Image (tube, one colour):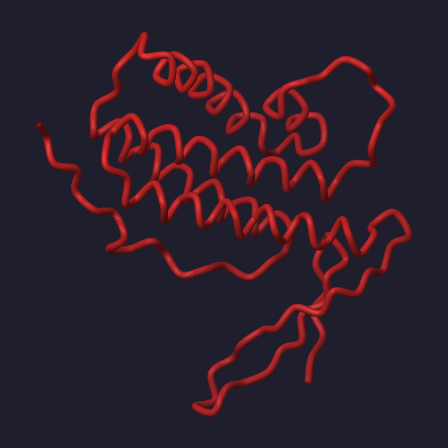
Length: 173
């Protein structure tokens, strides 16, 4: 049995299944005093919710809904990085996740700029001031899936199954 430690203090027990394939199982133990059990659980929950949001986006009824749900999934993944890498601050001014992300994970600066822009667009779409094509919505699903995998890798967590055939065509009316 091999123990693998992630950057958020979660240990994974490396085992094999009945067919001899490697598999991992999380053990919520922390190594750093700054990482609490509730913090680890919050990070893992955010990543699970991001994945669920992407699956939900794949089955959306409209292009606008797909775009918005994909952006929210990326927002949850970014929030997981911030929760894993920073301590709560006494700062009084609320800040955007996309503004904070480059400060705690400079390697994600380009992603933060991309999603800050798509967040402004999401706001306009939700207000009905702007439309979005199905192609743009599908592209954001794929980009958000890629971002989620980058985040999981950054936190040294195992990858998840690709969405593959989850993306369902939206009927054009």
